[in-house]
Image 1 (tube, rainbow, N blue to C red):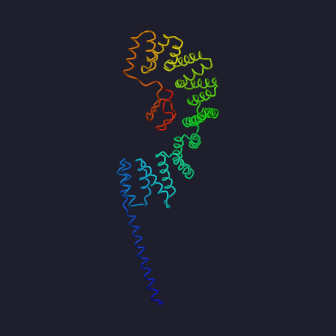
Image 2 (cartoon, rainbow, N blue to C red):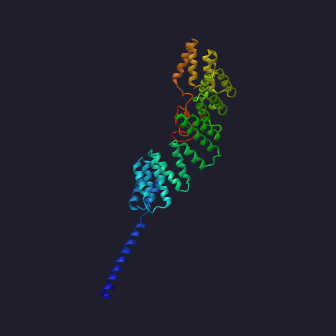
Image 3 (spheres, one colour):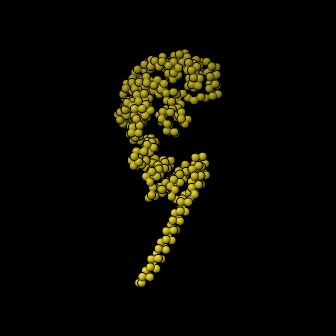
Length: 384
């Protein structure tokens, strides 16, 4: 091959290479010149709460700038918010497969994946993602709090207990109260399995974290009662009355039953009188005494107690019904009919009615954690 021929080939190669380099730089330049305006518009729409506009702009960005990871991330989040969980998961999972992601981007995407699973009700997978993310993200507190929330939803109280202890100072009051409630709720699961000894240990541990923990005394007494250790059950419930007298109504019926079985039923009246000596307006203690008076045939005394209750709380339905019933027993028909007619005009709520102070969720039973908004101690249990 001649020297001239070789030079011609080299020249052609240089020309082709130069053209390719030019075209590549042009493509890169064009990509850099992609207008950021749709993405900016999308962010503004999200801040303004205009989700439909944001959705449209984000889809535009995804088509024109596929390297914009954040646009895809937010697009998936909007799908989740509109309950299109499969689509949200598809977008977020596909993002995790990109090889050029930074550690921060990968973490944000996995947080969204966990949110997708949680929102769709698949809490088991949400926990799996969050646990792995927590291990690999230098114990990110935001991830830890999300994981803690998932543990609570799944009622995995042991894991929740250990994680909360790591997250915050267990010496603070609010934190110790919640740690105590974790122990109580774990203990309740032991009761359901018939493991009464383990349950009692858990309830006692709860009191080590919060000596005023009402449900710990309540359920510890129940665990003793189920194990036919009536005297210890009574002692637990009496302690509850001392620690939180306003929550005493939770154990009045239990105490009466246990004392009756112990042959000490006469003590219950003294117990209620002691409560009234420190709080004369305790309508539930008055109501319990009125019922005891009825059983003893002390009708006039019972009627007087019902009147006292109605003076304190005119909406106390059971007291009004009790008084009307006793009027009938005394053949005072007109008074009884008059009272019943007033009751039918407006039926107020019963005394034992519990409402979450955060979200207004209503429950006929006392709850220590709201199943609607997940707030702790939001039912004012001590104030029926």
